[in-house]
Amino acid sequence: MSKLLDDVKKLDEKIAIETGSPNIEVPNEAVTYDSGWKSTKYLSASAFDTKFGKEDFASELKEFSEVWDILERGEKFVAMLYTFRSCSQALKDVQTNADTPKEVKDEIYQKEFNIFRPEIKKLSDLRQYHEDTVKKFKDLIESLTQAEKKKEVHSQLKLDLIVRLLDVLIKLDKLKDMKSNL
Image 1 (cartoon, one colour):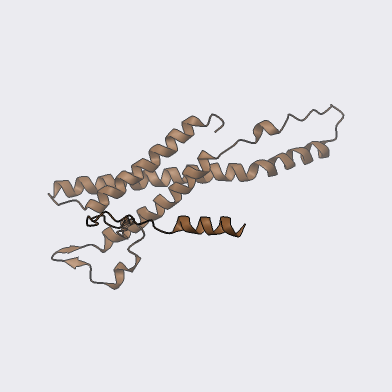
Image 2: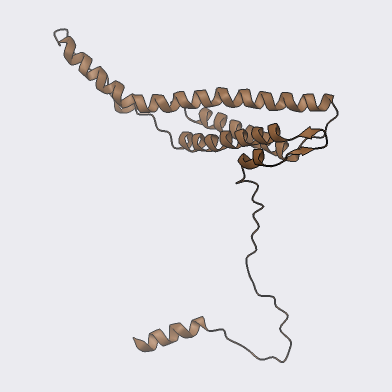
């Protein structure tokens, strides 16, 4: 067994073959770069001077922060919809006779309601998120058109956030179409 372990340890060692030629190979290392702008929500912008000439960017930075929050919530809803399963098929219709007491029927229906309540809440939250997001998207597009009338230059970050917001809305729409039980 020890001979086997020695052989395995030899595999970890670099095998050097002397050919007399210079080694021009660069060490193979992964290079990653994170610009950090994805994690910044510009919440600290109010502590700094955000004026540049006549422009004040505080409102735009606040708007960016709101869009980041919307995007985070949207990604959670995308994951929720992707894994969504309806529980309605698991429950069968209650077979009751005419002489079944009303209290028993009410208890059965209350238990079914308690089973469905969390799922209905999720879908209700999704509907509210959709309404809020569409309103925010509309406001962003309106702000772009107002800036266009004034011949202002659009912020690249604002355009990127609008694209990401539209992407989340499209994902949610496609997932909604895929799930026939919604």
